[in-house]
Length: 371
Image (tube, rainbow, N blue to C red; front, side, top):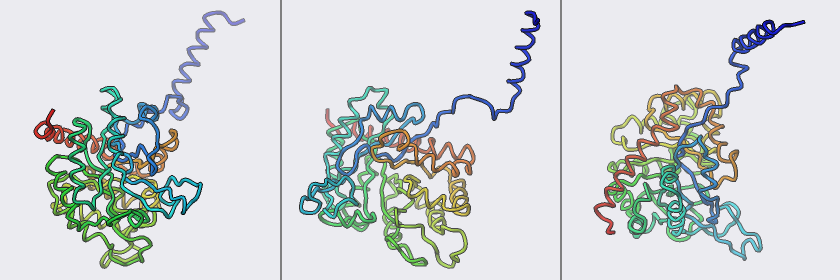
């Protein structure tokens, strides 16, 4: 018969054994992600989406801050084109897209419903302007006057985007358009952070060809050094693949040779104001294509750790799986980066850029917006 002292000794031995087990058997809860999201659409191409309350629930304690914007384009429901079927995405219809300026008022209204503490977790962006319209900059100014204290930047707005640009009603946006120059100049004046989508190349480009829009984009970026600009998706798209060859680089060398182009921009002091986000699962598929592409990208980021931001580019996600999918896809990249660099990409660079922009915009509003 086991007495009380023997029972105590057995329990002590059992506890000691458990404590000495390898960490593999630990049941400790998973640590929070602790990231920021530089690229998030609250609404879709028919201006529908989740509430900010639902988004806060998805963010939980895993996401600290999110750059908040809708989509500036509305998909037309043309009965002659699709009948009773109402398209919800730009690939669902041949009918045109048009600029939907009310998106900014909607974002501001939803943001202002939040408590001050909740508002700290979002950085709203102005996106409902037409970059091919000389009055586009006036729309941005009107939004700042109508909703002082709300917006931090402009974007995501688009100049060249596969399958989208050709569907937009009216003039086609262009990197050489003075309307774009006026918008970027005002961003520099007011401190608004810029998030721009511009494909570096055309869809289905043949290997070895020079990227069609690269020279124009470089000229535009160099012309607006006063503006802080984030180039979305590293210039890539669903079928706008990484540049395969550059100059004398052989096709079988580091792929994508797209990395060399980004490296050239980041190493040139005239582009010190330019940053890149790696948002979108379509971009992740290129980076994670194989070990060579993964480590080439990881080295690029390690060499320039302050110039990259993570973004999900999710559109009105319905649940956690839909929202965190892109982050989870990038696990091999996170593991390839040093902890310091990973923290900058996921969090630190966002805080620095958005905090700086917010401070500058509030100062501009203090001088220019009447009570």
